[in-house]
Length: 602
Image (cartoon, rainbow, N blue to C red):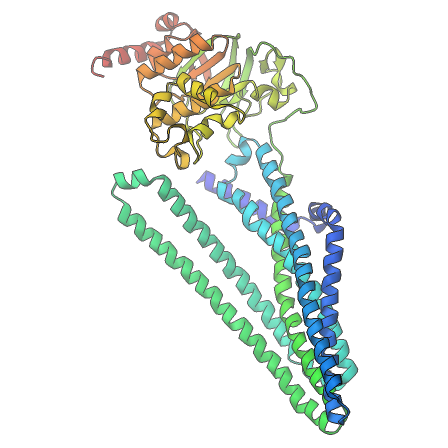
């Protein structure tokens, strides 16, 4: 309940920040791209303006032709010239529309790409606290829905706003020139159209959001079901999963039908209101034409200008909706980019003379953000280069947290952790992390080939190096058992591999990186004892100068290490060799007796 309350509080703070962030703070996200593509935008909007002016000239051509026919002064050659002029204008409009759509809509895609790259790059710089306080779905929403909303506002939103402004002002100007009184009657229904479009567009926006959210739920359910397909089969849940998927699909279809209903009302309403204005023109404008207050050509031109005015009136609500969505999404992106990692990264320091990656911890304590109890307390230890260090302890004793701190995934107090004789808080993060290979409890694998997963940390590795890393991790024979060998696709999160194979693949990746320090955070728990011994023997034989930390509660593995650290409730309670701990630590001795007694049964 406390965690839920914290999440609700965080969400409320986020919504408050989104509404209070001033527009002046958001503009720097867009201005650089507008300046960079200013020529493209200038040409694009110039083409858009010319298109509007050309469209506005067509009613004048129609007026000349109709007035000529009414007065009997029209000739076949004059009508032919007017027809050719209209055709030429239409062709030119098509070409210029292609120009402005390519330039302006293309700009919005460039803007979207620049923001996406910036957001993605920023996310990769964030620390563990950032990812623990945000769900993967909310982060993905920033680089999908939010960016799409900004792209639409800076693309079609700007185009529609400029187009509607030019067309409405010019069309009304021409209509006023023809007849001010007729313009008054023709424009009477137009505010109704603008209000109706605004109201319906707001509902359309809300229902579009519902469709997008439901699509996300449907996609996430399908993804999780495919990842856990073995579990579904083991519990015979195929029919239940299919039923749940069908329910979500029905909900998604219902949401789309509600959107279609709004669209089905919006466009007929626009036509109805436009025809109401047309009716007013026919009634009042017809009388003016009969009385010869205006010419027949003016009457036809007036009708044409009114039809041109329907789109700008409809665009008022739509454009306002686009800009509102874009501004809201831009605020969310701004807040994401404004977040800073808690873990400092002293990139200005250029220390690169760490030759012996030794570890010295003095009074190290650590408490996770948002918690009160320390996960590690007063840890002091020195580990020189070339040692294999075993780490053991009960569940929740702080072993994994200790490993993450070694890899510099969390912030700690100054002077508590020295790497190579230098305080880690004075080193760039890369100086430490580039020297440590990390194998976590849960292997992170990609839906790619085995070879690509092994070489993830070293893209330049050749096939022989990849194979040697697999041999060192005692995985090569397993790989060769697959039909496609190292080119085998392992599926999402390595679903086609066993638990032990996944762990050894992650170990092979770490070994291929060839870093002086290797941290294995219980990364061999799913490997059998014999294979585990072969891996450790390889580490001793081929990587005898590496410093290795291995988290494990297997006595046989721990007995082969140089020194063993025993953790209990966040404290380092004992350290020493296998024989020393058998005599000094009750937990280690009890674990030894239990495993030795159970070995014959195994």
